[in-house]
Length: 210
Image 1 (cartoon, rainbow, N blue to C red):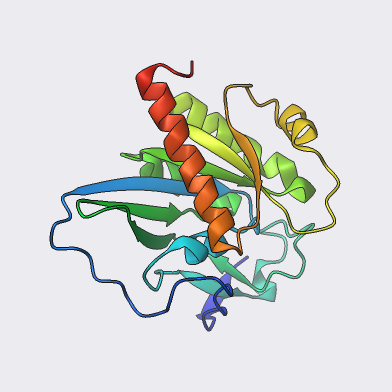
Image 2: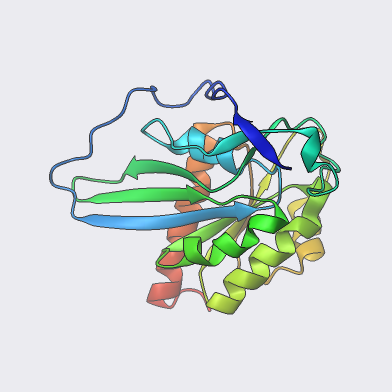
């Protein structure tokens, strides 16, 4: 939807890291990049906010009536703010390596930005919502076309009785692509998604997955 004014930052998840910034180690030499993509309102901003050790950079704006008819809000009618550029967070892996996490905007009119976010990325997380699975097809197609490794995370909003097997079939997802359930509000759950992605990339590099 069209946005005009900034919205106050949402409250962090209960298990999120402290709001104060964690200094970047002086010994940091290697920066790894991960993109988080998916449909409108699927929880990308929430996931970045959950895992980041620093106060994440967020470009959320308040949604207004001017955007009706521009963005499809079916299934996410309660959404009040939307990302208009990208979200950014950081995780220190060890003394020499840091992970930068970029959350992409979900509206179709901003999809042209995705290819730039994919550039140089170690891999990507496709966050899906079973209320709007069709919103995930473009992300999966683009990642497959670019040869970017990815995992798919089903963000469970509660009350969802779809099995992962049903989600995989609905997405026509290759058996080699990891699919897992997550709660983007939980830091531990979101971290497991990133761990799964790193493991998948490692398996691809070492020939453990084809």
